[in-house]
Image (cartoon, rainbow, N blue to C red; front, top):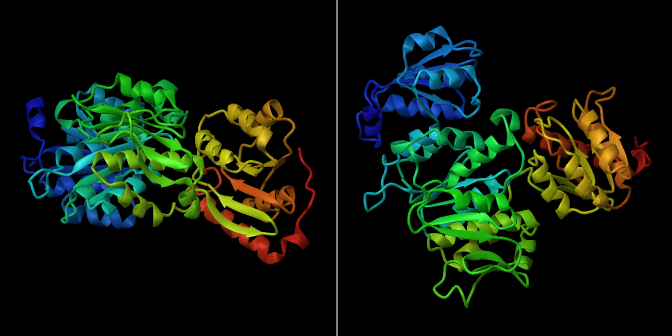
Length: 511
């Protein structure tokens, strides 16, 4: 395959016929890739270690082929296929043998986002142009900000869809026959790494982009903190209108400074303090836009108030930051403040994101199971000072010492779950030895979350907050953060129904 042929594949209407494409993985993303390319007439083989029965049954129906088997090394069937392009699902890390083989063999390596950009003109707007893209990444807050942005754009009269890492593959949104004015694309660091391999025709030119924040995460996948940071920075590349960054996170500012953007693109900062010209911020309880108005040096526009956000459960500091970033995106597209207020009034956070499960006997039980890394947990802990903190799980190579040192003085107690609890116990003894710490194992019943709730209730007593914000992934004991949150909620409800005041071990023994 010549680079000239690949460079010509920059439209749905280009000639994709016969292009030999190997698709790695058959989850939601992999199937969307295979389905798209089969529709375009490419020769598609999907390589996967396992497959959902429904997807496996559909592969021959759409005109593709499926090769199931170990992918610990390069399968002979893949070598024999001699692919012209390999499109990998985001789970395949850079050091994976198949990814290394692809690069060493000088075979084009794409992710689903590059393919999506190349075929984005399947359905166009009234003027014949494809939907604009707004790109959102960050260690935390991506999904909330993506949902907020799409909701604000729709309230402003635009046809907008959230897609990407949020759960709707970008290729599904592109092929939606109703079409959109804007695609709000949530991008993981994995997707951005693949996008970083793109050059020329495959590089998106986003209307607006943001990295909400940066903290160590997915270090095993990327290989280092620097590699993770570099992947996140790809989000700003080629931005046309607004490079939105977090003024409280210097790393995001440097990403914007270093990015190669289109002429005329502006840097737009957001923070919880007084905004300067071209910023979004907070003044006397008002969320303020000083970026998208004619006289931004001398005037400002009010978006909403902290009191209004408190009324709808959106006043936690990290959520306000998400709202400011989303408002910057919406205002860059011409959405008026009144439409943003309407959008916020009806907006609800996803389950497992600072979700109030119950309030009983003076104790609030909060599920933030989606806080799967220290940065996310730190935001929750700041929102709920004095909490009994439920922490632990699959740490993904991340040290919790810094978080525990910072949060320790504000904690009432900590309950540690997870198969490997020792690093967390050690971090508490080193950085916050004054915090009462309890280890939760599954006990005789095999129900670790029931034990977590029992210990947390005893530590909380008759007032305060119990906060599930584990700062860790969940796969050591649960099927995902959703399962972890649901089992927490179930355990809390069971505890209350049993009569916690009578059954609680009111003074559990700390370590």
